[in-house]
Length: 113
Image (cartoon, rainbow, N blue to C red; front, side, top):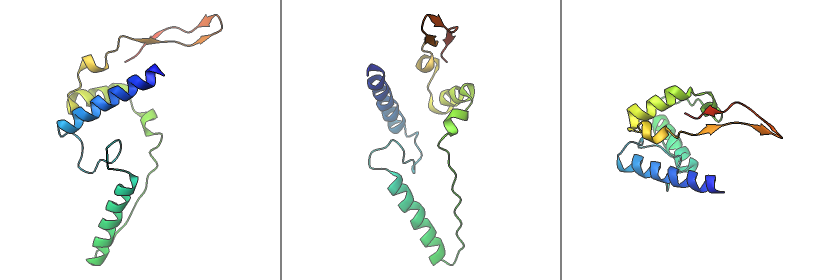
C-alpha cells in the first residue's frame, strides 16, 4: 500500500516536471490529463482522412509494444533519463537492495540501479 502511494507521488512529480519543462512530446497521450487512447486514435484517423481527401495514399502499421519496457537495457534507460530529461544520479540512486526470501532461505542481495 505504501509503495503504491509513493509510486503515485513520484509519478505525479515526474509528470509535473516533464510538463513544466516542456519535455513531453506534443502528441504524448499516456499519463496526461485530457489525453487518452481515444484522442490518439482520433488524431490518427483525422490524419488518414486528410491524406485520402487530398488524394494521397495512407498506410497504417500497428506494433504491440506492451512488453517493450521489459526488454529495455536499464543502464541505457538511466543514461537517457539523465541526458534527455535532466534526471541525475540523485533521482535514480536509491541505495536499496532486493532479494528473494523463501522460508528461511534468502538469495544474494542485489543493489537496485
